[in-house]
Length: 375
Figure 1 (cartoon, one colour):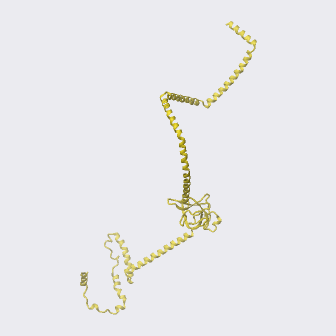
Figure 2 (tube, one colour):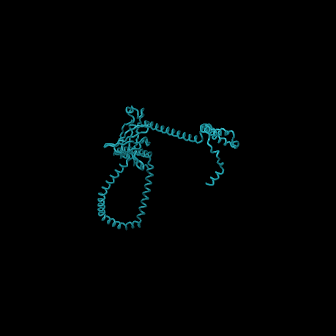
Figure 3 (tube, helix red, strand yellow):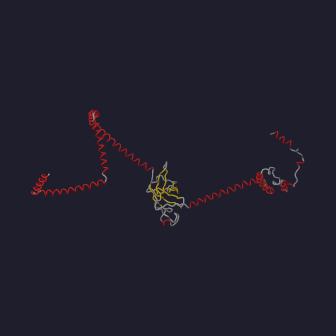
């Protein structure tokens, strides 16, 4: 560092008494003279477009890169005439940027505030009354056919019921009066939801829920109106049901399991003689079964089974031959045979009446004798 200071002192001009002379008073009375050399130097600098860059002819992008620089110099040149330097311009630009950013931020906040105000005027509230809360709290989603349309903003409890104040996000979303309102718990974490299910016939209202005459129309749920809901799928109810079922089963099991054990023991005692008899009977039947296997009884049974199978085949064939047409023909033949037998019976009665006379018999005998003689 000392070496650099000594080198700078050697290069500087020697100190003379003439340089320490007091300046004339006129230099202090006219401060504008201090800006004249700078103005002269700015005016003496050549225009940037008077001496183009040496590579502007070869590189077309060089001219484009010179445009911002040229604009910047032309902007600083008139400002420099009035005493504004580069630092002043930069500080002014930073201040202008900050002011414009603050103005844009204020405009954005005002727009968001206006949007919130507009959306607030489009919302409406309604009250759902339930017998049990089932986990309803502030922020519980309200859904219509599975789509979230609002949330619970307040819960009022009393000894009779639970009133849930619901805020619907848009007045275009209507709730028919014939809808079913249920509080359900679904999902892996059993999140509490208020489900609204409209029923047929669906209404076609001409007035919205915020209209003063909405109550007179009576088709949809209007602002600040009440509607009763019911309990749907609830984890608390399920736990209560299983708890009661477990208690009942425990009481039944303790009392009846002992009785069942006693009955089983008595049955086993009573069945013991029967089991011994069955065992003896099995021992007696065993030789008989061996004799049956050794004898030809099984073969006879097989032949009988085959004969029965053949007979059943003949019966199937005969039954296949007894068609409705053949049955009708057999009936007609039977009727004809009966008629013929009746005719024969009448003829035989006539013949018996004819041959019953003694003279006729005698004549017939004489006739037969005469014929036998002739032969």
